[in-house]
Image (cartoon, rainbow, N blue to C red; front, side):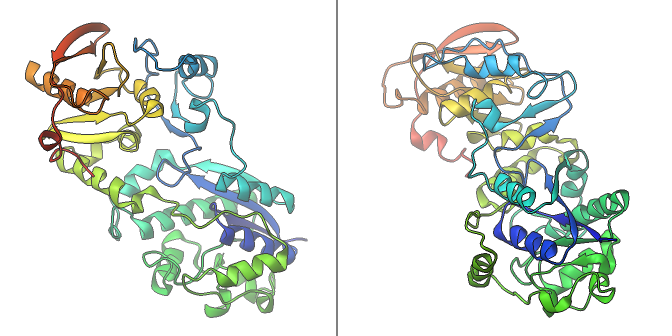
Length: 392
């Protein structure tokens, strides 16, 4: 009887190579791609159980094809907005099909081409607890890599048991990532996940103690590899050996390792109880410019029309601002303004990031709140007035 294994895959060449090595050893493989907002590609969906946002936000569009987003949302209510989930799916929102250059799709397609079963699993419901309470702390930014990997391998163990598989493997390379792929961390993750010696890392197996699949002769250790470190040359050579020519270029897969995003997260934690935060809060951090004008008040500014379209879906329950008669950003206020001056300040920020930023005259802006529209005249703020508020 053929041995079955669960392969954990990301959007990289290492995953493709690990899959091929296992298939070459006559292992039946089910390839699993785990997703959350933090380590999905921008084309993947992120779900949050909330009331679907209203789509009647009355802003003026800049293009003739200006209702594509709202029409798409209404038409695709089973995927984007349903009564049970809020799904921000960047590619679907933009009306584009998944690109063949999407790294996750590239690896999934390769998995299918060599006879592997594939599945994408959304871990969002359970992941925030891990993110907010990491036993082994964070990396350089806000990346809880050890806890995250232990969590994913624990999920993989459950899938392995449900599927009747015998072990789990990954494309991890010893020493490639300092927080989660050093020998000590790999051993810790194996223990914490409950998999122990049922985790095989075929690209670095010869540098590690034999695992159960090797000891049981389910796989031939002599046909595994001893790759180590951050160099990509051995992987490129191995890809040539296997005839793999279409593979993703190296890129950081987890946004929690991004310094800019991490600064926004730390700002959020400074002024809000992290245990109360949801995917909506973290999703907003990916969109637009963020300016902290008060401890309990933040202004989010769309950088371009795509940002504006996405921000529309977050206006419900917040105050929205845009120029009345000219193109410009959509601004939303995250928090409850104390007075009219707070709203005027946000309006001045809106004008600051428009083409009228250098105007010495007042600019008319629309204020959208609770279904009502008011008009306010403000002068655009100067760069020196806003620069200390920008979270960057």
